[in-house]
Length: 456
Image 1 (tube, rainbow, N blue to C red):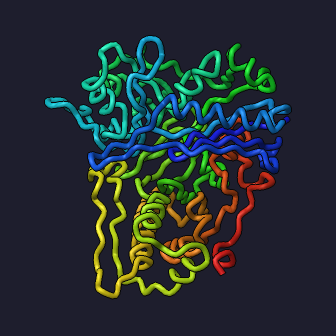
Image 2: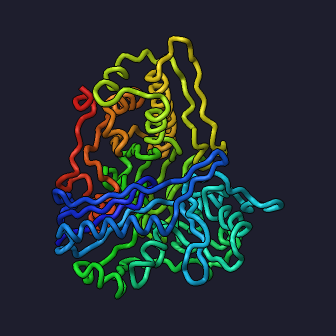
């Protein structure tokens, strides 16, 4: 049995085929970059039909290469928080708002939860522009009154499958889910201007979908494959990093960045206390993920490479090794992720002189993100009562040994390791779909390398 793992990211769509132990099959990878539209007004949007077309191209490429013939299970890692307005016939009536969009704000006269602390404990979220409690009322002012709302993954999979309910994991990222009851929270829905019975249907535990007739004709190799409920990208990255219990925290830097831990909390059980500065979402019906996220990550590196005309490859790494560290930076170029409310354009550079180089600026930005992560890791550890082992992962850290070393320095004296697998999100989603989440740190292909040795 093979597994097709899809990664519905912010900067790209990827599809790869894994074996029964979630190890990638050589050469069985298709990727398409997607166009994220950002603006000085804080916008961060994707085109839904174009995004779907990228996924279709990936599936076509894998099918043409003969990689789908033994696929029995399809797993998906998908971005949290996205929302898309759709017309009654299911066609988009506007762009996809991604996590990066900072424009939504409460409507004039709107009030938040009656008890913000209790709301935070129930939903793991806040009344914040990142969540549907603020996004849906804001969007209604800008789209046709007949529009309804769905997530990006539900739109994409709803086009391909005979049925595409919202997974518990992605529902938790809307900010409207009661994390204990695993049902829509009435107060959160009221804030969003919808009744719970108007929300998307939630996938029950054990749910699997199938391709619809048109999709099965296009990809007959997948006609009998089971499609597992999508997993939020941050949760999938934790599983793919082998961080599936409170002894380990995952620090993942892709387009954005985050620090997270997973705990076993079955449906109906009371979740552990949640620090007021951290969010909490669902991995599946039996586990929660707690942490903090940042709008800046690999996009900082991409911005610097584009605007500062940096050297590349080993030349850049050598130059970073010579940096004195005089530039201090606030890396919040894209504004705050919840609970912060700083708008896009909040980045700062300090300590510049006529001797400052482009590489100094890059190092200041990357080090600034390291410090943000270290502060929030301390909050995670406070709830556990002891230091955690840290596993670094994600494409941006794979590309920069210097950045991995910078994290090693700021997180000392903790043990810091590096997950070499560049496809941690897809791998993690596959392990959740297989029901092997608790084995993630032992499965073949999920090895880790001590960061000190790796950096050397």
